[in-house]
Length: 205
Image 1 (cartoon, rainbow, N blue to C red):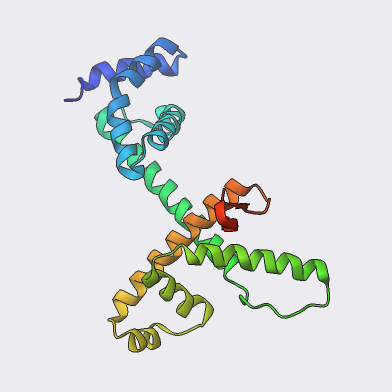
Image 2: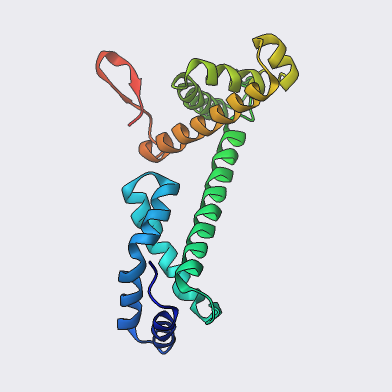
C-alpha cells in the first residue's frame, strides 16, 4: 500500500527545496513499483534498470506539476506508464524507419556506372538479404511479397490462402523482427564487413 499522501507531500516539498535526502527517500520508497512497470514493458532486467532511472529523472523534473491533493503513488505510476508508452512508440517508429529505409530499393540494383556506388549498393543489399534469411519462413514471405514484390494485402491473401488480417499481422511481425535484426547487426558490425564463422560462412558479429 502507498504511504500516506501527506507524508509524500512533505517529501516533495523538501525535494523542491533541493533536499537530496528527501529525493533519495522517494526513490527508495517507490523504486520497486517503477521497476516493475518498466520490466513489464521491456521484459529485460538491464533495460528495465535503465528505464527506471530515466523515469525517476522525468518524475524529478515534473515534481512541481504534481497536485498536492492527489495520491503521489498513483501519479508516479501514471508518469511511469506514459513514459514507457512514449519510449515504445518512439522505438517502434525507429524500427519502421529502418525497414522503410533499407527496403526502399530493389534487391537486384541496376548498374549505375559508378563502381563505388555499385559496391555500396551491393553491400547494402547483402546486409538486408542476411536479415531476411534469418526471419522465419512465414514472416520472410510476408515481408518479401509486400515490401519487395509490392503485392496488395488482398493479392497476398488470395495467393497465400489466408485472411487479410492474418496477412497484415505477419507483415507487421516480419518488419518488427527484421528491424530488430538489422539494428542489432548494424550496431555489432560497426560499419565493418561481417566476420566469417567456421566453414567460411558469413555471420554477424
